[in-house]
Amino acid sequence: MGRRLEPKCRLCRREGVKLFLKGMRCYTEKCAIEKRNFAPGQHGQRRTKLSDYGIQLREKQKMKKFYGVLEKQFRNGFAEAARMKGVTGSNLVELMERRLDNVVYRLLWSLSRQEARQMVRHKKISVNGKLVDIPSFRVRVGDKVALRMNESLETRIKDVQEKRETHDLVGWLDMDKSRTSGTVIRLPEEQDAGLPVEVQQIVELYSK
Image 1 (cartoon, rainbow, N blue to C red):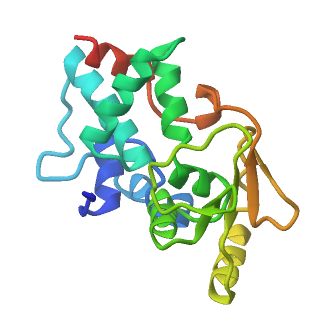
Image 2: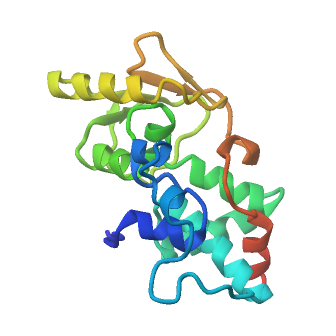
């Protein structure tokens, strides 16, 4: 599986918005957007007017980076969303939100989606009692996602949840009292995601 290896803060600066790729750092004054809210590179501070295509491309790049997926994965996701009934943009957000790595992040078990992806890969997550180590696995309504706990993971999860306690759990997931498992109670909607993206611009880009 391909990975993005460039510095995470440069990605946020390039798009001009917080994509929350560096965990709790994004919520502090150390965030790169707070310090240098302009694009990286020699000409980053130049003011440039984007064409319609440029605006659409930037929105697509934002969403890709937000969920940490590569171009082929994203394009395949859009093609599937276009085949589904309903609004293509909303369908695309739903498919991205249902990824297992995103669910782990939404359940407050990691500080970033990259960390959540690593947890899935390292076989720390089960779905309906069965081990799942595929980050792109899509959950369905009624699925129960749980941590495969050990002493070191328990300490880490407790630390993560203390740091993220001010950030609400999304409405389409229900966490149990032990905070070590959660259930998908409904499909996610576009407004649940809190995306800093104009999804319709992506639809127009791919519809050309």
